[in-house]
Image (cartoon, rainbow, N blue to C red; front, side, top):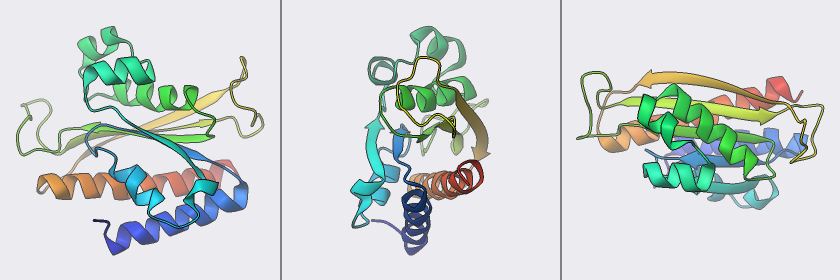
Amino acid sequence: MVTPHIETLCASLAQVLGARQLSLCTAESCTGGLIAASCTQLSGSSAWFERGFVTYSNASKHQILGVPMALIEAHGAVSEEVARAMALGALAHSSAQLSVAVTGVAGPTGGSESKPVGTVWLAWAWRDAHQQTPHQTQQQTHCQTLLKHFKGTRSEVRFATTELALSELTQIAENVFS
């Protein structure tokens, strides 16, 4: 199920998170849990993988992650605003220091002129590196987003999204929590 490249990315992420005693949570729509499954395929992942949310429907994004329905209605589920809210919502509903969220159109159906098949919004959020106690009322969080237009089959879009999510998580962990 997981490609050798994804296995390598997960191993790198595990090493970086483990060395920094960080934990990760995921919020996935178009990948349907592939990021979490890839991470937890590694033995010992319980040391750094905190939890995963698969929020495929708009209702689940709202009910589980707290994404406002008004935000989904205004911008659509596949949007920067919703990806950001998913990543921040995952952090708010976990004790992890890092989160990744993905929402997109994996295809082959479901695309539109403005959001064609292969459109994916990714968001990475993290707690302030100097305030590692979860659930502090004044704790600072940060978030970055990225829009990608992947080509290929449904599986190829999902795997490419997973690869990018993992790769950027490793970069953030290395750079922010150095």
